Structures are given as structure tokens and as C-alpha cells.
Image (tube, rainbow, N blue to C red):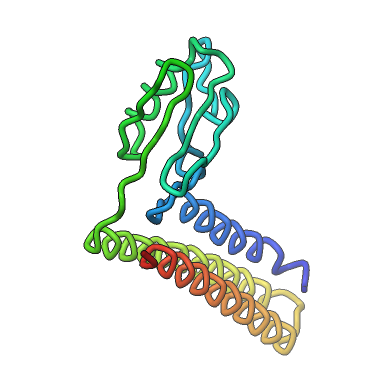
Length: 183
């Protein structure tokens, strides 16, 4: 890989990684601890990731259990979950917090798949923007002492890179859609 294309490959990789982490947070009927990844708990005045204030387990396919390191954090964790977009009301027994995920309806599954595809398209746009930026940079490079053949090879390599990332994105979206539609 030509070093001149590296910044554009990095941008494409970031778009892919962002989509991957974004899709991990979408629940697909099963309890997935990643839905809690973006939640921050007020821990002595500091917004702290929920994973750093308690032990998160999945004792059953549709239940997430949070065992806080300190019992005093139960109210703060519940408050953080309620204020998030998880859409599930936590329940606690004084020492553990449980999130029970209801079965997804057929309609909700279809809405989630549409959302996944929309996010996939947004990531494709980001990848194509990186390609456009790369092509613009190559056009500027053509005005210097770089041969037309070399520019053409770089453009082809950039297009192949774009195609590779788009294909990987499609696969990611397809897998997540299948996961969501599986009852």
C-alpha cells in the first residue's frame, strides 16, 4: 500500500469501526451487555462508564445483571440507565440491578433492520467521502512531478480500497440484520 493512501485508508477504517461499535449497541432480542457501553454513571461527581462501577453478566438470554462494586451506586446506576436510550426500566433487589429484555415484535425487528441499513449507508457515505478526498489529493499531486501512470495506479488502488471497505460494511449490515430477524 502506498503511504500516500494511508490517511484515506485510516478514514475508511474509522468509518467501519464506528459502524461496528454502533451496531454492537443495538439489541437483537437477546441481552447484549454492549447496549450499556455508552452509559455513564455519576461516580463521586465523575461520569464513569457503567462497566467500571460494577460487574455486568448475562445469566439468561434476555436478562442483564449488574452487580455494583459499591451498594451506594445502585441508585446512580438506575438513574443513568433510565436517562439513557436503552428503553428498559431497571429493577433492583438491594444488591443487584436487573434489566429484563422483552421479546421484540415483528414490527420492531423490521424497524431495527431499517435502522441498521440506514447506519450502514451513512458509513458508506463516509467511506466514499474519504475516497473523494483521496482523489482530490491525487489530482493536486498530478500537478507536481508525478507521472500520469503513477496517479492512475494510485486512483485504482484507492478504488479497490473503497470497494473492499464497502463490501465489509455490507457483510456487517447483513450479519446484524440476520441476527435481529432471528427469533
